Image (cartoon, rainbow, N blue to C red; front, side, top):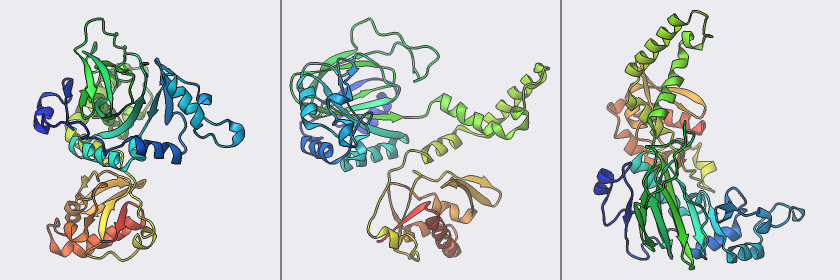
Length: 381
Protein backbone atom coordinates (compact mmCIF):
# COMPACT_ATOMS: atom_id res chain seq x y z
CA UNK A 1 0.00 0.00 0.00
CA UNK A 2 2.69 2.52 0.92
CA UNK A 3 5.66 1.05 -0.99
CA UNK A 4 8.16 2.29 -1.95
CA UNK A 5 7.82 4.91 0.83
CA UNK A 6 7.70 2.20 3.49
CA UNK A 7 5.47 1.64 6.50
CA UNK A 8 7.79 3.19 9.09
CA UNK A 9 8.31 6.37 7.07
CA UNK A 10 4.59 6.64 6.38
CA UNK A 11 3.56 6.21 10.01
CA UNK A 12 6.18 8.68 11.24
CA UNK A 13 5.70 11.45 8.69
CA UNK A 14 2.15 11.21 7.31
CA UNK A 15 -0.33 9.08 9.30
CA UNK A 16 -2.81 11.45 11.01
CA UNK A 17 -0.61 14.36 9.91
CA UNK A 18 -0.38 15.12 6.20
CA UNK A 19 -1.43 14.18 2.69
CA UNK A 20 0.89 12.12 0.51
CA UNK A 21 0.81 10.76 -3.05
CA UNK A 22 2.76 7.51 -3.47
CA UNK A 23 3.39 6.44 -7.09
CA UNK A 24 3.34 2.70 -7.59
CA UNK A 25 4.04 0.06 -10.19
CA UNK A 26 1.15 -0.36 -12.67
CA UNK A 27 -0.93 -3.44 -11.96
CA UNK A 28 0.18 -3.89 -8.35
CA UNK A 29 -3.44 -3.71 -7.11
CA UNK A 30 -5.00 -5.56 -10.04
CA UNK A 31 -5.75 -8.73 -8.09
CA UNK A 32 -7.68 -6.91 -5.35
CA UNK A 33 -10.78 -6.24 -7.43
CA UNK A 34 -10.88 -5.94 -11.20
CA UNK A 35 -13.52 -5.32 -13.85
CA UNK A 36 -14.40 -9.01 -14.28
CA UNK A 37 -14.97 -9.46 -10.55
CA UNK A 38 -17.01 -6.26 -10.41
CA UNK A 39 -19.20 -7.53 -13.25
CA UNK A 40 -19.78 -10.78 -11.36
CA UNK A 41 -20.66 -8.90 -8.17
CA UNK A 42 -23.19 -6.73 -9.99
CA UNK A 43 -24.76 -9.73 -11.70
CA UNK A 44 -24.90 -12.05 -8.71
CA UNK A 45 -25.77 -9.77 -5.77
CA UNK A 46 -28.98 -7.89 -5.09
CA UNK A 47 -27.50 -4.40 -4.75
CA UNK A 48 -29.67 -1.32 -4.37
CA UNK A 49 -29.24 2.16 -2.84
CA UNK A 50 -27.72 3.16 -0.51
CA UNK A 51 -25.32 0.21 -0.89
CA UNK A 52 -24.95 0.76 -4.63
CA UNK A 53 -25.67 4.14 -6.18
CA UNK A 54 -24.92 6.29 -9.20
CA UNK A 55 -23.74 9.90 -8.88
CA UNK A 56 -23.20 12.60 -11.48
CA UNK A 57 -21.98 16.18 -10.93
CA UNK A 58 -22.47 15.91 -7.19
CA UNK A 59 -26.03 14.57 -7.33
CA UNK A 60 -27.44 11.04 -6.93
CA UNK A 61 -29.34 9.64 -9.90
CA UNK A 62 -32.93 8.55 -9.46
CA UNK A 63 -32.69 4.78 -8.74
CA UNK A 64 -35.60 4.18 -11.13
CA UNK A 65 -33.15 4.92 -13.95
CA UNK A 66 -31.07 1.82 -13.22
CA UNK A 67 -33.29 -0.52 -11.15
CA UNK A 68 -36.13 -2.74 -12.38
CA UNK A 69 -39.65 -1.48 -11.52
CA UNK A 70 -41.28 -2.60 -8.28
CA UNK A 71 -44.04 -4.32 -10.28
CA UNK A 72 -41.47 -6.97 -11.23
CA UNK A 73 -40.87 -7.92 -7.58
CA UNK A 74 -37.83 -6.98 -5.53
CA UNK A 75 -35.86 -4.32 -7.47
CA UNK A 76 -32.67 -5.50 -9.11
CA UNK A 77 -30.17 -3.84 -11.38
CA UNK A 78 -31.55 -3.05 -14.84
CA UNK A 79 -28.56 -3.72 -17.10
CA UNK A 80 -29.87 -1.46 -19.86
CA UNK A 81 -30.65 1.42 -17.53
CA UNK A 82 -27.30 1.01 -15.80
CA UNK A 83 -25.33 1.08 -19.07
CA UNK A 84 -27.26 4.10 -20.33
CA UNK A 85 -26.76 6.04 -17.09
CA UNK A 86 -23.04 5.32 -17.08
CA UNK A 87 -22.80 6.28 -20.77
CA UNK A 88 -24.35 9.64 -19.91
CA UNK A 89 -21.62 10.44 -17.38
CA UNK A 90 -22.68 8.84 -14.10
CA UNK A 91 -20.16 7.19 -11.79
CA UNK A 92 -20.89 3.91 -10.01
CA UNK A 93 -20.27 3.67 -6.25
CA UNK A 94 -20.35 0.42 -4.27
CA UNK A 95 -20.11 0.77 -0.48
CA UNK A 96 -18.51 -1.85 1.77
CA UNK A 97 -16.80 -3.59 -1.12
CA UNK A 98 -14.93 -5.79 1.38
CA UNK A 99 -18.16 -7.72 1.95
CA UNK A 100 -18.26 -8.98 -1.66
CA UNK A 101 -14.56 -9.07 -2.55
CA UNK A 102 -12.48 -11.54 -0.45
CA UNK A 103 -9.08 -9.99 -1.21
CA UNK A 104 -10.34 -6.54 -0.27
CA UNK A 105 -11.62 -8.06 2.96
CA UNK A 106 -8.15 -9.47 3.69
CA UNK A 107 -6.65 -6.03 3.09
CA UNK A 108 -9.13 -4.45 5.50
CA UNK A 109 -8.13 -6.99 8.14
CA UNK A 110 -4.46 -6.06 7.78
CA UNK A 111 -5.35 -2.37 8.25
CA UNK A 112 -7.27 -3.22 11.43
CA UNK A 113 -4.36 -5.23 12.82
CA UNK A 114 -1.73 -2.56 12.17
CA UNK A 115 -3.67 0.64 12.88
CA UNK A 116 -6.15 -0.66 15.50
CA UNK A 117 -9.20 0.95 13.98
CA UNK A 118 -12.35 0.06 12.11
CA UNK A 119 -11.97 -0.04 8.34
CA UNK A 120 -14.25 -0.21 5.30
CA UNK A 121 -13.76 0.16 1.56
CA UNK A 122 -15.92 1.84 -1.08
CA UNK A 123 -15.43 1.22 -4.80
CA UNK A 124 -15.69 4.02 -7.40
CA UNK A 125 -15.96 3.44 -11.15
CA UNK A 126 -16.07 6.24 -13.75
CA UNK A 127 -15.89 6.50 -17.53
CA UNK A 128 -16.40 10.04 -18.83
CA UNK A 129 -15.53 13.57 -17.69
CA UNK A 130 -18.22 14.28 -15.08
CA UNK A 131 -17.34 14.25 -11.39
CA UNK A 132 -19.23 12.05 -8.96
CA UNK A 133 -18.84 14.55 -6.08
CA UNK A 134 -17.98 18.22 -5.76
CA UNK A 135 -15.12 19.36 -3.55
CA UNK A 136 -15.57 17.98 -0.01
CA UNK A 137 -13.77 16.65 3.05
CA UNK A 138 -14.25 13.31 4.80
CA UNK A 139 -14.69 12.75 8.56
CA UNK A 140 -12.33 9.76 8.47
CA UNK A 141 -8.82 8.95 7.33
CA UNK A 142 -8.77 7.79 3.71
CA UNK A 143 -6.46 5.79 1.46
CA UNK A 144 -7.21 5.89 -2.26
CA UNK A 145 -5.72 3.07 -4.32
CA UNK A 146 -6.07 3.16 -8.08
CA UNK A 147 -6.98 -0.31 -9.36
CA UNK A 148 -7.26 0.50 -13.06
CA UNK A 149 -7.16 3.57 -15.30
CA UNK A 150 -6.43 7.12 -14.11
CA UNK A 151 -8.06 10.11 -12.43
CA UNK A 152 -7.00 13.69 -11.82
CA UNK A 153 -7.17 14.83 -8.19
CA UNK A 154 -7.00 18.14 -6.39
CA UNK A 155 -6.23 18.10 -2.66
CA UNK A 156 -6.44 21.15 -0.39
CA UNK A 157 -5.25 21.82 3.15
CA UNK A 158 -7.91 21.60 5.87
CA UNK A 159 -9.68 24.82 6.78
CA UNK A 160 -10.49 23.59 10.31
CA UNK A 161 -8.15 21.44 12.38
CA UNK A 162 -9.45 17.92 12.94
CA UNK A 163 -13.09 18.55 11.99
CA UNK A 164 -15.72 16.11 13.21
CA UNK A 165 -18.72 14.69 11.39
CA UNK A 166 -21.21 16.49 13.63
CA UNK A 167 -19.00 19.42 14.54
CA UNK A 168 -20.00 22.51 16.47
CA UNK A 169 -19.20 24.58 13.37
CA UNK A 170 -18.55 23.46 9.77
CA UNK A 171 -15.23 24.05 8.01
CA UNK A 172 -15.26 26.75 5.35
CA UNK A 173 -14.47 25.66 1.77
CA UNK A 174 -10.91 26.38 0.64
CA UNK A 175 -10.31 29.48 -1.46
CA UNK A 176 -6.63 29.04 -2.28
CA UNK A 177 -4.59 26.89 -4.60
CA UNK A 178 -4.46 23.12 -4.09
CA UNK A 179 -1.82 21.58 -1.85
CA UNK A 180 -1.43 18.99 -4.59
CA UNK A 181 -2.86 18.46 -8.05
CA UNK A 182 -2.00 15.60 -10.32
CA UNK A 183 -3.00 12.37 -12.01
CA UNK A 184 -3.36 9.23 -9.95
CA UNK A 185 -2.46 6.31 -12.18
CA UNK A 186 -2.91 2.54 -11.94
CA UNK A 187 -0.88 1.34 -8.95
CA UNK A 188 -0.74 4.70 -7.14
CA UNK A 189 -1.83 5.41 -3.56
CA UNK A 190 -3.14 8.62 -2.01
CA UNK A 191 -3.43 9.17 1.71
CA UNK A 192 -5.92 11.93 2.57
CA UNK A 193 -6.19 12.74 6.29
CA UNK A 194 -9.49 13.68 7.90
CA UNK A 195 -10.51 17.23 7.04
CA UNK A 196 -8.40 17.65 3.89
CA UNK A 197 -10.58 18.89 1.03
CA UNK A 198 -10.42 17.02 -2.27
CA UNK A 199 -12.14 16.38 -5.60
CA UNK A 200 -11.54 13.84 -8.35
CA UNK A 201 -12.00 14.25 -12.11
CA UNK A 202 -12.45 11.31 -14.52
CA UNK A 203 -10.34 11.51 -17.69
CA UNK A 204 -12.74 10.03 -20.28
CA UNK A 205 -11.38 6.54 -19.75
CA UNK A 206 -12.44 3.62 -17.54
CA UNK A 207 -11.25 4.25 -14.00
CA UNK A 208 -11.59 2.02 -10.95
CA UNK A 209 -10.40 2.92 -7.46
CA UNK A 210 -10.97 1.94 -3.85
CA UNK A 211 -11.31 4.45 -1.05
CA UNK A 212 -10.34 2.78 2.21
CA UNK A 213 -11.72 4.64 5.21
CA UNK A 214 -10.39 4.35 8.75
CA UNK A 215 -11.88 5.75 11.95
CA UNK A 216 -9.24 5.94 14.71
CA UNK A 217 -10.59 7.14 18.06
CA UNK A 218 -10.60 10.82 18.97
CA UNK A 219 -10.40 12.59 22.31
CA UNK A 220 -14.17 13.07 22.06
CA UNK A 221 -14.61 9.29 21.79
CA UNK A 222 -12.54 8.86 24.94
CA UNK A 223 -14.61 11.44 26.83
CA UNK A 224 -17.83 9.79 25.63
CA UNK A 225 -16.54 6.49 27.02
CA UNK A 226 -15.68 8.20 30.31
CA UNK A 227 -19.22 9.60 30.51
CA UNK A 228 -20.56 6.05 30.18
CA UNK A 229 -18.35 5.00 33.12
CA UNK A 230 -19.79 7.85 35.19
CA UNK A 231 -23.26 6.31 35.08
CA UNK A 232 -22.34 4.18 38.07
CA UNK A 233 -22.50 7.25 40.33
CA UNK A 234 -25.99 7.95 41.76
CA UNK A 235 -25.10 11.63 42.16
CA UNK A 236 -24.80 11.95 38.37
CA UNK A 237 -27.92 9.93 37.66
CA UNK A 238 -29.99 12.21 39.90
CA UNK A 239 -31.82 15.26 38.63
CA UNK A 240 -29.98 18.54 39.15
CA UNK A 241 -31.32 20.24 42.30
CA UNK A 242 -32.07 23.92 42.80
CA UNK A 243 -28.82 24.32 44.76
CA UNK A 244 -26.46 24.02 41.82
CA UNK A 245 -23.09 24.89 43.35
CA UNK A 246 -22.78 21.66 45.31
CA UNK A 247 -23.69 19.38 42.41
CA UNK A 248 -21.41 21.33 40.07
CA UNK A 249 -18.49 20.68 42.41
CA UNK A 250 -19.46 17.01 42.69
CA UNK A 251 -19.59 16.61 38.93
CA UNK A 252 -16.17 18.23 38.53
CA UNK A 253 -14.65 15.99 41.20
CA UNK A 254 -16.24 12.77 39.92
CA UNK A 255 -15.09 13.46 36.36
CA UNK A 256 -11.55 14.23 37.55
CA UNK A 257 -11.45 11.09 39.72
CA UNK A 258 -12.72 8.89 36.87
CA UNK A 259 -10.17 10.30 34.42
CA UNK A 260 -7.43 9.50 36.93
CA UNK A 261 -8.74 6.02 37.72
CA UNK A 262 -9.61 4.87 34.19
CA UNK A 263 -6.55 5.49 32.01
CA UNK A 264 -6.58 6.13 28.30
CA UNK A 265 -5.01 2.71 27.72
CA UNK A 266 -8.14 0.98 29.05
CA UNK A 267 -10.27 2.88 26.56
CA UNK A 268 -7.94 2.04 23.67
CA UNK A 269 -7.99 -1.67 24.55
CA UNK A 270 -11.78 -1.66 24.58
CA UNK A 271 -11.84 0.27 21.32
CA UNK A 272 -9.56 -2.32 19.73
CA UNK A 273 -11.72 -5.15 21.05
CA UNK A 274 -14.83 -3.72 19.44
CA UNK A 275 -13.44 -3.03 15.97
CA UNK A 276 -15.98 -4.40 13.50
CA UNK A 277 -15.16 -8.12 13.12
CA UNK A 278 -15.45 -10.11 9.93
CA UNK A 279 -17.86 -13.07 9.81
CA UNK A 280 -16.08 -16.38 9.24
CA UNK A 281 -18.45 -19.04 7.88
CA UNK A 282 -17.20 -22.62 7.58
CA UNK A 283 -19.97 -24.78 6.11
CA UNK A 284 -20.74 -27.66 5.96
CA UNK A 285 -18.44 -28.51 8.87
CA UNK A 286 -19.28 -25.76 11.37
CA UNK A 287 -22.55 -27.28 12.69
CA UNK A 288 -20.60 -30.40 13.67
CA UNK A 289 -17.36 -28.79 14.83
CA UNK A 290 -18.86 -26.03 16.98
CA UNK A 291 -20.13 -28.32 19.76
CA UNK A 292 -17.71 -31.22 19.32
CA UNK A 293 -15.22 -31.95 22.13
CA UNK A 294 -12.31 -29.52 21.91
CA UNK A 295 -8.99 -31.26 21.19
CA UNK A 296 -5.39 -30.01 21.24
CA UNK A 297 -5.48 -29.51 17.46
CA UNK A 298 -8.85 -27.73 17.43
CA UNK A 299 -8.55 -24.18 16.13
CA UNK A 300 -10.33 -21.36 17.96
CA UNK A 301 -11.17 -17.83 16.84
CA UNK A 302 -13.41 -15.07 18.18
CA UNK A 303 -16.76 -14.98 16.42
CA UNK A 304 -18.13 -11.44 16.88
CA UNK A 305 -15.36 -9.48 18.59
CA UNK A 306 -12.02 -8.31 17.23
CA UNK A 307 -10.33 -9.11 20.58
CA UNK A 308 -11.41 -9.58 24.19
CA UNK A 309 -11.14 -6.58 26.52
CA UNK A 310 -10.40 -7.66 30.09
CA UNK A 311 -10.96 -5.83 33.36
CA UNK A 312 -9.40 -7.21 36.58
CA UNK A 313 -11.85 -7.99 39.39
CA UNK A 314 -9.95 -9.44 42.36
CA UNK A 315 -8.72 -12.94 41.46
CA UNK A 316 -10.83 -12.91 38.28
CA UNK A 317 -10.87 -11.11 34.94
CA UNK A 318 -14.11 -9.91 33.37
CA UNK A 319 -15.00 -9.30 29.72
CA UNK A 320 -18.19 -8.69 27.77
CA UNK A 321 -19.19 -10.86 24.81
CA UNK A 322 -22.43 -12.10 23.25
CA UNK A 323 -24.47 -9.75 25.43
CA UNK A 324 -23.11 -11.15 28.71
CA UNK A 325 -20.51 -10.30 31.32
CA UNK A 326 -18.07 -13.21 31.67
CA UNK A 327 -15.71 -13.91 34.55
CA UNK A 328 -12.65 -16.18 34.26
CA UNK A 329 -9.86 -17.10 36.70
CA UNK A 330 -6.75 -14.95 36.35
CA UNK A 331 -4.51 -17.88 35.21
CA UNK A 332 -6.65 -18.26 32.04
CA UNK A 333 -6.45 -14.61 30.99
CA UNK A 334 -3.09 -14.79 29.10
CA UNK A 335 -4.44 -17.59 26.89
CA UNK A 336 -7.84 -15.99 26.24
CA UNK A 337 -6.13 -12.66 25.49
CA UNK A 338 -4.55 -14.30 22.44
CA UNK A 339 -7.93 -14.99 20.85
CA UNK A 340 -8.57 -12.95 17.71
CA UNK A 341 -11.23 -12.66 15.05
CA UNK A 342 -8.79 -12.65 12.13
CA UNK A 343 -6.75 -15.70 13.09
CA UNK A 344 -7.77 -19.13 14.34
CA UNK A 345 -5.26 -20.47 16.88
CA UNK A 346 -4.70 -24.10 17.79
CA UNK A 347 -5.53 -25.02 21.39
CA UNK A 348 -1.86 -25.93 21.85
CA UNK A 349 -0.92 -22.32 20.99
CA UNK A 350 -3.37 -21.03 23.59
CA UNK A 351 -2.12 -23.50 26.19
CA UNK A 352 1.44 -22.30 25.58
CA UNK A 353 0.40 -18.85 26.84
CA UNK A 354 -0.71 -20.21 30.23
CA UNK A 355 1.52 -19.38 33.16
CA UNK A 356 0.30 -22.46 35.02
CA UNK A 357 0.34 -25.79 33.18
CA UNK A 358 -2.35 -27.11 35.52
CA UNK A 359 -4.81 -24.59 34.04
CA UNK A 360 -5.00 -26.50 30.72
CA UNK A 361 -8.14 -28.46 31.57
CA UNK A 362 -9.86 -25.33 32.89
CA UNK A 363 -8.98 -23.52 29.66
CA UNK A 364 -10.55 -26.25 27.51
CA UNK A 365 -13.68 -26.24 29.69
CA UNK A 366 -13.92 -22.45 29.35
CA UNK A 367 -13.47 -22.62 25.56
CA UNK A 368 -16.24 -25.22 25.40
CA UNK A 369 -18.60 -22.93 27.32
CA UNK A 370 -17.70 -19.98 25.09
CA UNK A 371 -18.28 -22.13 22.00
CA UNK A 372 -21.76 -23.11 23.17
CA UNK A 373 -22.55 -19.41 23.71
CA UNK A 374 -21.23 -18.47 20.25
CA UNK A 375 -18.41 -16.28 21.61
CA UNK A 376 -15.78 -18.37 19.80
CA UNK A 377 -15.78 -20.48 16.68
CA UNK A 378 -14.30 -23.97 16.72
CA UNK A 379 -12.65 -24.98 13.46
CA UNK A 380 -11.16 -28.25 12.33
CA UNK A 381 -7.37 -28.35 12.06
